Amino acid sequence: ASAQIGVIGLAVMGSNLARNLARHGYSVALYNRTAAKTEELVAAHGDEGTFVPSAELADFVASLERPRKMIIMVKAGGPTDAVIESLIPLLEEGDIVVDGGNAHYEDTRRREAYLRDKGLHFVGAGISGGEEGALNGPSIMPGGPAESYVTLGPILEDISAKVDGEPCCTHIGPDGAGHFVKMVHNGIEYADMQFIAEAYDILRSAGFSAPELADVFSEWNTGDLDSYLIEITADVLRHVDAETGKPFVDVVADAAAQKGTGQWTVQIALELGVPVNTIAESVFARSSSGHTALREAARAALHGPHREASDAAQRAELVENVRQALWASKVVAYAQGLDQIRTASEQFGWDIDIAGVAKIWRAGCIIRARLLERIRSEYAAHNLTTLLEAPSVAAGLESSQAGWRAAITHAVANGVPVPGFSAALAYYDTVRAERLPASLIQGLRDFFGAHTYHRVDKPGVFHTEWSGDRSESQD
Ligand code: NBP
Image (cartoon, rainbow, N blue to C red; front, side, top):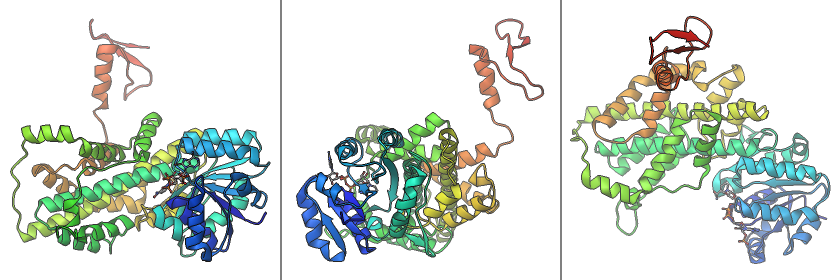
């Protein structure tokens, strides 16, 4: 036994994670189902550190120091189960198996219980940052038994991204907590990208060119909106297609793909009863974009409003309004995602520290943004039910709301779809409302289904005899 940690699955994520570990001085055991990939990795990057390659899983396991620590980085779902099954007979009590793939948190809960029964530790770790992050420092969200974090944690913290020397890795909570938080991270990422796309669409429709918008996003990236996604938006908008000389964004087919974590976030939010309408609209917007037949049929039959041309002053004002809409909507998406994490944490007894989550999202991951430091400090200072009530956030929303509303009004008047911005504003107006029309819904439900209602002025459950004399009875 000579390796301190191992990686199983050497596609793009696994290879880069293995290289990251090796560059930090760990001796890394390597295994991939197709041995050629293992050999390729060692041939190309063997000089970056100490690698212990094995063509057989048994040799890989034997090459690890005890308690063995190994990270599985294979395709999520069946392949992860297959790897776990082949590992079990080879492992010994106390060994730690980490799943770094994008697993569904329920699978992680099941696997954790299964391996715990066998005396093994199973750590479902969300890893964000794509290939670049895996190599140079991802944000890591490990769940699983706290005990395993004592030996595993320092290694993961070592290879994670850092903010002022602080690692973007913390023990999130038991069993599926890490993968749950990674899933919500991706849900917020969907919303973030949808908002960026809407901001682009409003401004492009108002006459801005792609390179002009690249400059707008670069400028935004120097202020409150400073984030990785805004930064790369400027890069993508500035890019010119070599073949046609057109802006790259004009030659890419306008159908957005998805791998499923956004959809999971929404499905689970529905089950938990947590409103995450910005994330839901983002998932639906991607689906709509891919409905070719629907779009063709509707395009042939339906017309929007006449688009008004705007002068330079109006365009400058629009840019500022859209910036405010983008910031405020982004805050709402974070509030919704964090609410989902808080609710799940209560339901599953995970005891997740939200300030800790915001802290490890500040670097390494795709949604890294200046805003996260504010979120971290607000959660650290206050016991918040929602991010929206945090003093600096509430003040920011207050000063953004006029621009936010104006941007949406402009979009609606000009027939530019803004499902994300509108959903965020609807949420803002819903949760801050003194009274909601839910009272009328309760009245209707009682009318047709005798579903009963509560009153504002006295306790109890009431029903009105709608088909009779309309007298009220108390249950
Ligand atoms: P892939 O998701 O493309 O998976 C390829 C790897 O899975 C290869 O090593 C392959 O081995 C292995 N594998 C498969 Br497929 N079936 C297997 C089986 N039955 N038994 C053993 N190994 C099997 O790789 P990736 O893009 O590097 O992603 C790895 C994980 O990280 C995924 O869960 C992904 O969701 C997650 N993730 C990816 C990103 C990203 O940016 N790509 C970001 C964050 C998380 P082979 O070489 O023998 O075919």
